[in-house]
Amino acid sequence: MVRPGGLVVAATINRFAGLHDTMRSGAYFEPANRLATSACVADGILRPASEQNLFTTAYFHLPAEVPVEFAAAGLEPRGQYGLEGAAWLLGVEERLDDPEQRALVLAALRAAESEPSLLGVSGHLLTSGTR
Image (cartoon, rainbow, N blue to C red; front, side):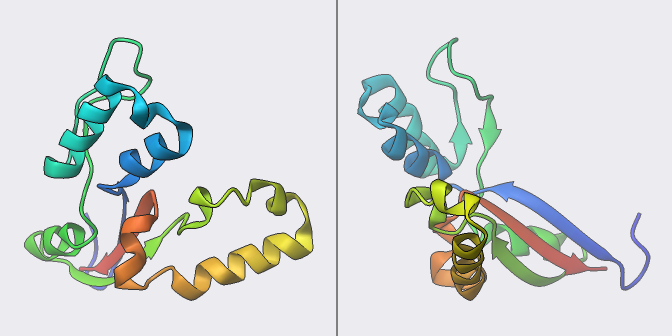
């Protein structure tokens, strides 16, 4: 239940998160992982490659799909935000320990967090809307 004018926020996993993550970790170069990753990019359904896989069966959204789902549910989409942006792919973890560098990383991420052409780079998205 959401009162009229109330805020709704949904967190989703980006369709390309698995591709980016497996490329970054090197798992993409294992044939079974590459097949599962490529299938997920094609249809959004993550099917674990093996029993040892630490993630579950899930649906990964394209960024543009979520506002359409909001509208279908009677919500007015208000914005989308990439949670990690490109930073998770660039190895900036050590910079987060330093307050000054962390501030610079966060400022850079904020500058691009809602740019539609960059939403697919972030592993996770927040989409907001109102009733």
